[in-house]
Image (cartoon, rainbow over all chains, first blue to last red; front, side, top):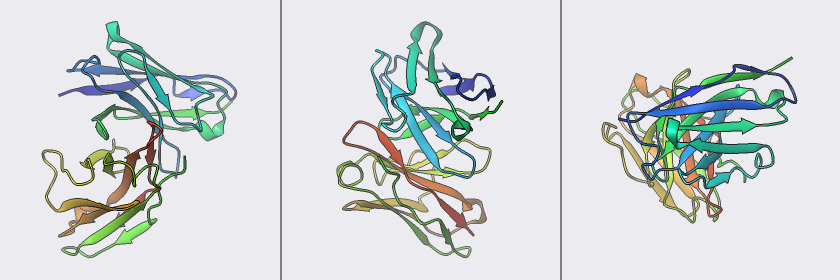
Length: 117
Length: 109
């Protein structure tokens, strides 16, 4: 069954850009599903960041929309997250997930990103 | 969009039943059948327990059940087991084509 794996720097400096990649394996990123990024800040709940379809169509959380970009590279079976102008509040475990649809039925293991100088 | 409202904690004894509520608005839970529930143990990926309000994925125990009335969804866990102790989150698709999660509920057995 499809597997997802996040990768990227674990430390980002304040005001910099957070960049993460999710690699989809044992399944096709062209499968007709949407693909999402979700995060969990320390001591807080889950927060949906946004999603992308293999055509490149996107939807974003309105509270993050001005700072977020999600892209897809079908040739590598990957989709990526960029979050700019980061602050300590963006420190979180970031998950990538498959949209079921209407639910998140496959998740990556998550990767901790710390924003600190 | 505001997070869906869940109780911070719910507890029960082994064998008992508990219900977790998830309250939203007419723009999310009230308008959508894409309501789902997740079990989250620390340092693990969240696990889908219920999708489309009432459906269980393959492999999920029938001790877990979901329902919805108006702007409020609920997850019931019957026959509580020690392994059910975890954080639980609801989620809903919205009329704006986004998703919103609940505030999370810590279940103690």
